[in-house]
Image: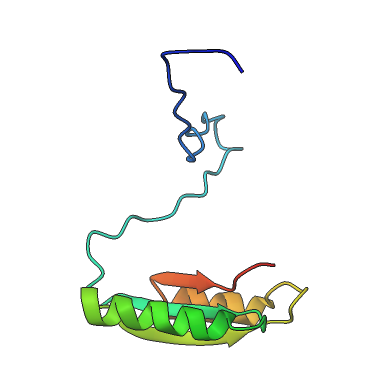
Length: 102
């Protein structure tokens, strides 16, 4: 380790992709200007205590910021969400809480 008077800051946001004509499609998420009335859904991955933790977090968002409870979808521990669950989340949520990892 070397002495340094500098601190390196790392921003955990990827840089914006460069556009390459019609062959480039950027995936972006929308910013929420407020949580009031926004539906907070949950993906339950059936890991121990994950659902309880996310339900508690969602309740904090409802009580503190005026969010609304959204839907809860369940998936297998090691598997992906099925297409129907993804559509349900897209249509029924502005924010999705995802199950915890090991």
